[in-house]
Each structure stands twice: as structure tokens, then as C-alpha cells.
Length: 114
Image (cartoon, rainbow, N blue to C red; front, top):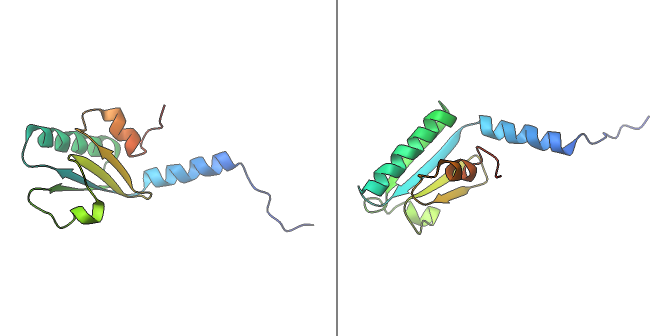
């Protein structure tokens, strides 16, 4: 008998790993520019998505680029609002006003791109 493992269904293995990632903790950073209506809308929309899709497993940090310049070089933020998914890897960015829920969900890999 040969002890070599026969590879399984690669697609099924990939889907299983994706589900494991989607079930794990999410660490998000939302960069905003001041207390503008656009910033407030972005915060509300991202918080709503966290509550609806990532209940109990999302850490959201909101950073005002006008107030805190210490983390911007680390994340290379060029526009606000910008949402960065730091975990799970790979790092993902969503740039814009966060009003297009599907765009944000696709950017966070919470729903498949159609």
C-alpha cells in the first residue's frame, strides 16, 4: 500500500477555509475626517454591518485623521473614510462613504463578489 495522501476536493477545502476565516474574529479600523455628516454616516453604517454580520466577533477602532496622526503611516491612508480589515488576513481596504452596504460586505469578504 502507498502511504501518500490523495488530495481531496480542492474547492471544498478552500470553501471550508473561507468559512473558518469568516467565523473568526475581525479587527477593523475606520479612518474618518473630522465630525462631518459623511464621517458620522460611515461610522453608523460600519457599526450596523458589524452588529448584523459580525455579532460578538468584531473589534472596530474609529480613528479621526484630524485628531490622531500616529497610525496613518502604518496603514497608508490616503482618503477618508477608509475601512481597513486588519484581521483576518489578508489586509483589505474599503474606501468611500460606506453607504453601499454590498460594496462594504464584498470588501470585507463577508459576501462573494457577483
